[in-house]
Each structure stands twice: as structure tokens, then as C-alpha cells.
Amino acid sequence: MTTPWSPIELTLTAERAHPDPYTGVDVDVTFTHTSGRVVRRPAFWDGGTTWRVRFASPGPTGRWSWTSSASVPDAGLAASGSLVVEGAGRGVFGRHGFWRTSDEGRHLVHADGTPAFLVGDTAWALPWRATLEQAEVYAADRAAKGFNAVLLMSVQPDTGARGPQDRTADEGFAVAFDDLPDGTLRRLRPDYFQYLDALAEVLARHGLVPVWQPVFQGFGWKGLRTAGALVPPVDYARYCRYLVARYGARPAVWLVGADRFGTEPQVLAGGREVQACDDYAQPTGIHYSPFADNRAHQDADWLDFQWCQTGHLGDHVPERVADMARNRPAKAVANGEPSYENTRRTGFAAGWWQGHEAWSNFCAGATMGVVYGAGSLWQWQLHPSEEGQSPRFSAPGAGWREALDFEGSRYPGVLNRVLHGLPFTGARPDWSRTANPRNVLVPGVFFLAYCHDGGDLRIAFPDGVPRTYRVVDPRTGEVLARGELGEDHTVPDPGGAPRVVVFCDDFTGSGIG
Image: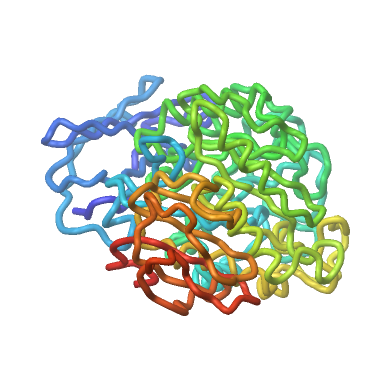
């Protein structure tokens, strides 16, 4: 027995050993609800003669019957059974379901339509470098600061990386595929993914959704040649299926392309495969290099979002987000990789720079969410003097643990606290109501103005702007003033500090009520 949207695991045991269990055997399980709803889930090989399938009931209580089938004759992999779903789901995902993109394609919502907003961190190397104890420290910190997602390279992608197979040793890392240095993905190590299961469980316990990137195409761990643009597309697609099978019965985001142009054949193969095997339709997208035009596969039905990267030179470049938001057909957008805090030198892109970056990107059209990064954290540098790390992307005097405390990490999560419970789905950039340059609007429902230095906000053309407002300090989420627009249509503020002004007729249940 289980509750809605809670993962359960079923084990299938083959009657005989198969010579190529990862590449040569496909196992699928069909779950059918008494209402007639059907959910299909791929199973994954977990070593020896063991296959597992993970399933989460998408909402309805009642009985599910299930039947498994395999691409090879084996009675142990052809089984059936049933399970019962009762009670209410637990936590925000248990109550509202996994993330998907909204009907108009630009925003995140839960399965039941409840608005959602992604606040992501870039701990790219956590899967192959972090220990469980370190992951606990990391996840507790990020959850307390308002993060709800973390971008992960699921495997160490550099074909030329060398070091001990030890997470605690300098230059050490765990290995997922023995043949990745050769440019193929066929000799999978189940023990790597069993440990990754435990890391993913830590993240889930703290409400952090993994953004799974299969194999990086661009700058990987140390900037060596990466396997993501080398492996045969069929290998890449099979690995995407494996990730969906293993991790797709929990909240997830699929990042099938990363740090390159998105036109690589692996990206197309991966996107199609995720669409084919993820019946929960969790968000699937591409994260580009700074040199891309950010619109590959724009019209593909498997593509839900596009993420730009504004480079690592310390510039605010919200126009890249705005440009992407104008592409058609509409996709959700975000800046998936702003400048990393304190990378190369202390003080670089530091402190409130990160808060201003987040609010500016949001108002430019990145209403799917915002992302943060820190030097030395993204590559999970074990300590400040660990050798072999790129000085270009490390923070002086910091390993991952010191980088966890950088000031700028306090600010992106405030967006989630401010937006929580508000009807911002459908918001678009708006310059027609006020001279303030950073606004978003849902006509008649929601209006938000980010004023980087505060001061009086005059609504020159109030049509479509709700009258009730809150003035919020975007550095803390503290509500500084409440009111209703008067005849002068002005929200007073003394100025000299950043402010967010939110207009909504009903703040009940919101984070700034």
C-alpha cells in the first residue's frame, strides 16, 4: 500500500543470467488503474539477475494492477501483481504532483496546476564526488536558503580525467561506466548508481529536485574532452532511458543537452527517448553554452524549456533571457548558469550581485525559475588547496564547504518565498504600466515590479494592475509595507535600497500575506 505520488519499488529476478543485461535487455511495466488510467514505466538492471521498477501513483487512490514484459524470453521478467493507493500524499509534491510545464508553455506548475518556481543550484559534480555525510550538509543548507532544485552531471564526463576511485581523495571520483573514457556507454556499474540512489534520497528528503544531465557535452569537470558529444546517440538514448527508469518516479527535471549548441545528435536522441519513456511528462530541456543561439529544436514536442548561459565574466545579461522568451513556439526559459560567485577572485559576482541577477532575469522573462552558482562548489573541490582543479573556475581559499557559505547564495531563494502562493503563472514582461524597467504582469491578476534602488513607484497606466500591494525587501523577503493604490497611483518608498512591489487582489496563503 502507498499514497499518491510516493515512489514504490518492485523487484524482478531473471531466471537466467543475460550476457549484456544493460544494453541487451529491455523490461517495461504497465500499471493500469481501476479508472482506466495507464502509466508505463521502464525497469532498470541493478546487477546480476535483478531488475527493478519504480512507480508513483499520479493522484488517484484505488487499485493499480501491473504487468511486466521483456525484450528477451525470461519468465522471471514477465510478472504481474497489484498495489493499493490510499490516503493523502505527503509534502508539496505528494499533495500537488510532480512538475510539468504550464499549458501556455512558459512556466512550471505541479500536475494539478498549482504554480511552481524553480530555484536551482549548480552542484554539478555532487553525484561522483560527494559522500552521504557531505550531501546532508549541502542539502540542509540549500533547503534552508530556499533552493528547491540542483543541477547535476549524473556522471563524471571527462574522457581524460584520471584519479583514484575514491570520493575522499584529492582528484578522486566514482566511476559510472568503465568504458566512458573510450567514448561509449555500455559497461555500466550498478554500484555507482546504488550510491547515487542514496545521494538522491538525501536531496529528496530536503525538497531538492535533481536536474539530471546524462553526460555533459561542453566544459566538464576539468575542461577536458567530454564524452557527451562523442558517444553514439544510441548509447546516449539508452542511458537517458536508464535515468528515467531509475529516478523518474520522484520529482525530476531532464536536461538532455548541456553547455554546447543543442544540435548534437545525442541531444535529439536523448530528448526523444525521454519523451517516449517518461509517462509523467516531467520537464525536459537544453542548457546552452554562451556561444549558442539558444533555440535548437524550438518546435520539438519533446522540448519544454531552454536555458541560456551568460558566461562567467561577471556581466548581467538579462537581454539573452528576454531574447529567448520571444522565440516561437513558446518554451519556458531561464538563465541556467550566471557567473559563479567568487570564481577566480574573491568578490567576483558576489553578494547582492546574485540577488540582482536573479530578479533581473525573472523580470526579463525567466519565469520558469532562476539558477545560482559558486566557484569551488560546482566541481565539488574537496578543500581549498586540492590540486588538479581549474583555477579559472575555483574560488580562492575555498573548497565546496567554504563555498556553501558565500553570501550570494542567500538571495535567489527569496524569489521562491515571495512568489509562493501567488498567481504568477502566465506572467510576461511589461513596460507599459510604469517607467520602472523590470516588471511582469498577468493582466488583472498579478503585477510585480523589481526596483533595484527602491524609491516611489508610480503606476502611470493602472489598467490591469490589481490595487492591493505589498512592498518587500528582496534581500530577506520581509514585507515592509501593505496598502492599496490611491488616486495618485503611487506606492511610496524612501529609496536607497532594492525593493519588490507585488500587486495582487488576494494574498491569502501567500508567502507575503
